[in-house]
Length: 202
Image (cartoon, rainbow, N blue to C red):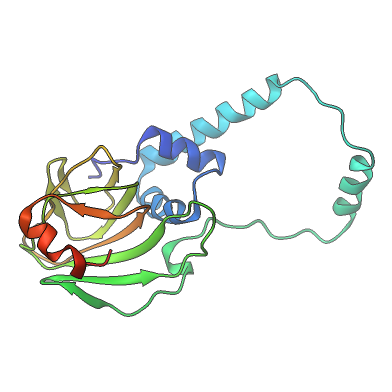
């Protein structure tokens, strides 16, 4: 049962096509698993269509009509499907801390685009309490973790920003594998966290 979803603002940006590619990939992984959020996206798209109908018409540029007609007469391109995590190359798993491994995902770097990576944590692994200097959108693919926001299992989405402080613990039973889109950096809050900060590259 999926209990945690992206923020309304994140879903609205996804529906509008304004979410950066990194976070869009993570949101797409959640949407693939979450009928509730797919319904919300459909509602946003419907609302967007209604708003377009209410916009005051604007005169087209000279030659715009002819340009569109020429494109319609040409070969039609197949519609572009939403890209998923599997559509991007990923690097090898590498050790970053005891019980914690990272695998980078090669997302084209656009303006303000979040960097994307996968994290794998062993059961019982505790991450020091930390904040972020930007946004962090996480979708759990398998396993689970627990922090101040609750229990996050497969399909759940953790949508955090600079206002959030958390200290995740990997739940018992199996490794937890997540895909993360992060803007900014992690800032550890505890003395131990600050001590290992230079060695943890996220």
